[in-house]
Amino acid sequence: MPQPCTVVIFGATGDLTHRKLIPALYNIAADGDLPSALTVVGFARRDKTDDQFREELGDALKKFSRQTVREEVWENFTQSIFYHRSEFGDAEGYTKLAERLEKIDAERGTRGNRLFYLAVAPDQFEDICLHLKKSGLNKTREGSWARIVVEKPFGTDLPSARKLNATVSGTFAEKDTYRIDHFLGKETAQNIMVLRFANAIFEPLWNHRYIDHVQITASEPLGVEGRGPYYEGAGALRDMVQNHLLQLLCLVAMEPPTDLTADSVRDEKVKVIRSLRNMTGAEVAENVVRGQYAAGAIGGKDVQAYRQEERVNPGSMTETFVALRLLVDNWRWAGVPFYVRVGKRLPKSSTEIAVQFMSAPSVLFNKGGAVLDQNVLVIRIQPDEGISLKMEAKMPGAAIRIEPVKMDFHYGTSFGKASPEAYERLLLDAMSGDATLFARRDEVETAWKFIDAIEDAWHKPPAPPPLCPYPSGSWGPKEADELLQRDGRAWRRL
Image: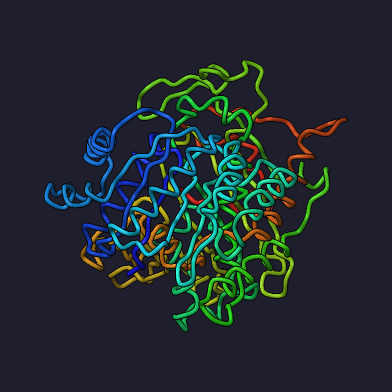
């Protein structure tokens, strides 16, 4: 149970607040895991009253809550929600916010504890941090705390990430800064360390002697969904690989931490990113495929090409798909490739990690002509969170016929309840002061350094790697298949 506090949400009228933050806080409250004194203050530019703000949030909650909304719980929770109207760059608005927070502390017993959540675009961070500092809202009295939660993107390259980090660190100490990556809040992502380090059957095999390769896939059937200008400035590599997928890779590849404190875990994750083999221009062309979706069909419905999307450059060279062959140059993973792919307009929505083990010797079964499949451990991040293990078994009957079978674990059926949403766990952790699932400054900057080298190779003359088109509804360009075929491997069917 976190301490009583006030959560101040900057950008309170935006999509993130309505779709994720308020539903997460409501569900935590409905589960009985929030202190009754917890208070939410929405900070935004539009004129509205507390009651109007509460009503809008209630309408959104009915659409986006993972649980059925119980009116008595929501009615009780709404009494802890308030609205504060101000421009982000208006000094007087922060002075009035400070006065209001003091009043809330006195009336509701929030003890001077504040969690400032920046649910705004990164270009607003500097204004908000500057005024939080000038108004003294970043300071705390003895026995209380003030923390800041920063939404991704954490910059668009290494220089912008460093600038953003400098802006935030000028107002809040690193220990009070929480860079949120919602992938790490998903139950299965959190379970990777338990799977590896709490089960003696896996950890002894978790190295280059027994693992053939690892595949990490994040696919979605959606296009850019009206976010053309944002995506034009980002692309799949910066939007997904730099944060989400590298974070998952780190959890799979990291060494056992000395303990489960935030910095011990994050120390090991940073070591993985530092161990990634850097690529030159020619190596990028050989190990990275970038693609862009063309027209096609998803679920029987025709969809247009990326270049035909609203507010997208008709000659755009922005990638909507990327596949990478990565190597982690340390003792544990020497020579084991990590294949990572992410794309839009693919056939289904799925994020998974597949750990493929070495083949067993087939000497015993050569006479029968049996071809032994490799054992594969699949960690499903979303949807249908769970873990499965594919192994070989004999089919019933007199003959020796071998077929692959699957042992499957589903969170929903095994534990009898749905997994909490990622934002529920992350908000609870931020309020409790646990930064384990949040990115640290050096982690973010080291990841950007690695990604920038790939981006640079894509845009340098004389012959940058081609942008490979792929039909919407396919699994990406044929060049991504060839990336694995050169190693005698193939992508898993999802």
